[in-house]
Amino acid sequence: MTEKNIFDTVIVGSGPAGLTAAIYNLRSDLKTLVISGEQPGGQLTITTIVENYPGFPRGIGGMKLMMDTQEQVRNLGGEIRIGKVEKIQRQNPSKSPLSKGDFEIFMENGDKLISKAIIVTTGAQAKWLGLPKEQELIGHGISGCATCDGMFFRDKVVAVVGGGDVAATDAEFLTKFASKLYLIHRRDELRAQVPQQKKILNNPKIEFLWNSEVKEINPPKSPFDKGDLDNNKLHSILIKNNKTGEEKVLELDGLFVAIGHTPATKFVEGLVEMKESGQIITGKNGEYGTMTSIPGIFAAGDCVDDVYRQAIVAAGDGARAGLDAERWIGNQK
Image (tube, rainbow, N blue to C red; front, side, top):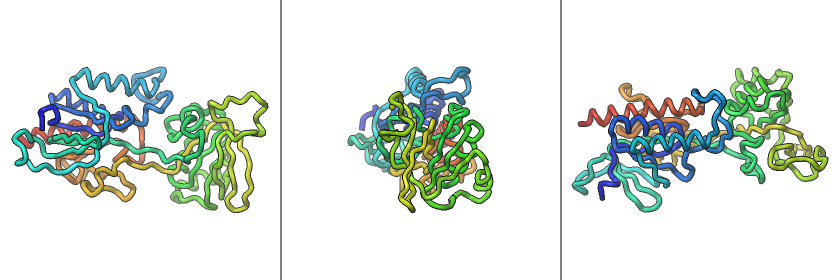
């Protein structure tokens, strides 16, 4: 083990939470590494315009915001490595005189790192429908975040796919902007909690399409296609009733997929305490609000938060985790 692979803190994840944690740790003179994953900058890099992050009166591109924040980390002396963590385990300090840390981090490329503290900020990915054209049209009519993108659809026709709490909350929020909203659900009743259902069931802007599934995005020979449709953005979807087999095309300006999120936390399964949904549990240690069930391992952002899922909230969580890790390391001395 060489000194270049020994750190005070290793931050797993490079979205707003991870990069903010890195900024705080670096300003505290901690040797800090950010492991970026395969998508440096996280989910925000696929957000076209961010208009709800303070300090940007005209908004800022998600990619630019993350690239600028990465540059800020590097300017403070931080290192960012592309790669994925395979597993983390407690370290046996007797193995090497250079092993100053408490944890061993095994990378998928075979590298091994040592760190006194770890901050997990790997986020959560929206579950998608898995249909052709879906990924290409994210940011061009298709979204997984109503609160991020809803205002771009003022006086437009949109649809929400899903029937749980997230779908119901998104539908209620989007009716503040959209002129009409279809809620597409594969069952004949919502799974959302009753109070949330009541907020949307009698909303005149919402039309419920029960027992229905999206089968195609921008279907060919759409009845709305007069030969001038731009297939680089969403214009329609084909839905099918799974009871009757009936198919129809809906003309849409926006499609919001609200069928859940998958936290990127598999690599810490069995190591830290987690919810059944995969989010990491923090805060049981009153002194360190972002500490997990394992002292020295902290977590922040969407891999913990299953409610807000906002960049500014993740950044705030990252600041808390950075401060907690700094204090924890100091107290070990």
